[in-house]
Amino acid sequence: MQSYQLRSYSVEETLRWASSFSTILLPSDCLLLDGDLGAGKTHFVKGLGSGLHVKQMITSPTFTIIKEYEGTLPLYHMDVYRVGETAEELGLEEYIEGEGVTVIEWAHLIADMLPTTYFSLKIEKVSETERVLTFKAKGASHVKRLEEWLNDNDIGN
Image (cartoon, rainbow, N blue to C red; front, side, top):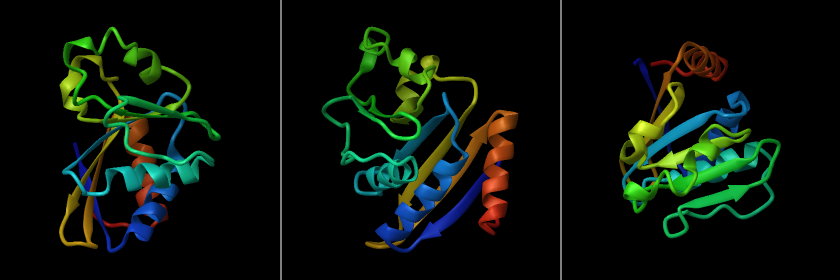
């Protein structure tokens, strides 16, 4: 799987990248989101929400597992770290296969429930303000949309 990196030098820039990225998302798309505590995962989801015209305040789903937001597409933000073997009981597949965009933190913990096509993003903290965002896509349609978005934004590999 080809990866593409870009750098963000501020929270505001991360929000802009995420808002821009939201323009390529379609119903039932899934974004696997990875990064250490404080890397900027929630900020990225806030930017996605902005691009999807979500009016509610977006917060981390760490203790609630799933947060649902209404926008031009529904946005489902999941943190499955504490889910373990109860993932199927929570109906996560209904969200993942639904009409919205699903963002999943700690997705490797529910690998057997993940769709066959998806976007992934790893956010790495370089300094207090700088982040490296590494995007990947699995599935021909996802790869094509990601590459078009990168090209439209003059982002090289």
